[in-house]
Length: 121
Image 1 (tube, rainbow, N blue to C red):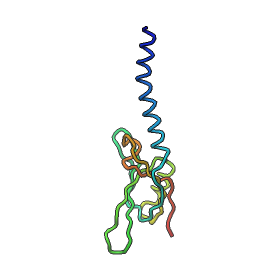
Image 2 (cartoon, rainbow, N blue to C red):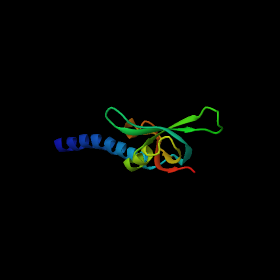
Image 3 (cartoon, one colour):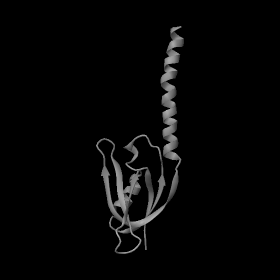
Image 4 (cartoon, rainbow, N blue to C red):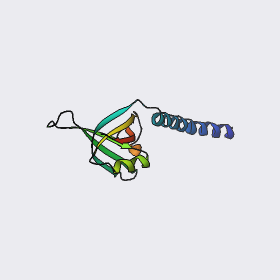
């Protein structure tokens, strides 16, 4: 009887953990949307008390003289972060994927992750 009770308790602990990790895997690898945004890379920094993440802001302007719309994003790849650091203040095009429902901000403060950057002509 004790072995059956231990198996039941182990199952009650392992099953929710497995479901959580499956959800986390799907949330990180299955994107809700993707696309490109163009503008001037205004800010880029590494932030966080425990989980350090790369966060940035892109100023998107449609007409000169009009206040820009700020778009916040996160970066998970350190190689992409280095590329972005080298183009702060310049006009760029960022490719991103959006992941909704992430359970914590340890992956980034936003659900929008930039995965490539290129200078705009």
